[in-house]
Image (tube, rainbow, N blue to C red; front, side):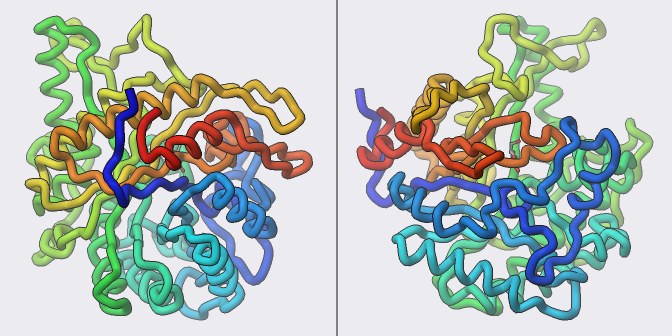
Length: 449
Ligand code: IFM
């Protein structure tokens, strides 16, 4: 049975600058922390980098035409900070602005609504040299950069996302060290988390100051909601504990929607011998300003079981489906997050799914055919979960598939495939996969089919 979505529900696809653009030395672009990190031996699994990636910088017209052909109604892309401000602050590079003007205009000419993300991880190296996300001044640097973009593009871009996945910016990059700049310092990570939140608040203010009232600003947060490994009372109790310590909520959605860091974040920092960031008067008010929407990036849940002492321990289901990233496929996790955020904002903050998708090894047949049944099923089940959440009252306004096309998957290089469009990196030839065709049918029907 078809599950219809409401009229006006927005269907799109998402990408990010460093993952697709290439052209890292062109038109005055400054260096980014990913240019640096990807040169570090062992940092990227296949030794690759984003120098060429999908060559989108030169092929954006073809890519926008592809999107139009697929019937996409919206495109979430990110702006590379080092293309606009090669040194992070100071002199503006007009050729960088011109590139995004061309992308935006191409979208609009094809009836595609542009959603611009201001920061999707490619921090100018010059700012890293000044302490990067560990330096509280980054909130001001980011606000200045946001204002430049809002002034340049705000007449046509009406949807802005400040940061993509600040949990990754803070913890994956500064405590786990798996992403640029590859640091492993719990105190630094927590400072970075607070500075991300400040940058989000300051960035929203800057955008609003430079644009008209029809402009909408939000943030894209990632979530890995806790689910018990089994239905046993022990696993459920352990999952409940883990839920209260969930960093995705505790460090980001809770301060942004409610204006405080839960006590569990303080406790967890102490357990890791990490200091909490200094919080100055006015910080939490800046952080918890009204968001016009909140973006949800969801891929997989966090499975928790009771360890020997009853405390939460990581779990792995034996009989579940896993993607090439080894991420469990569980659409219920998406529903959980949507309900949680709806409740946390008292239903007052509209939601968009700003990323959702899966990496699988595709069957590249040739002659314009790529079979990816597992991805079709992933989309179908997660769209059904989104539909169910809306039926239950969640204010969900749109869905962006991650990703438009295969691309540079950060530390996993070119060994993961999230695209609805296959990219042959040797020729840069694009081929719409079965999942891309499926997504087009969903858009046409405005329903899960
Ligand atoms: O490719 C990334 C994206 O840049 C951020 N969200 C998760 C995706 C898949 O790992």
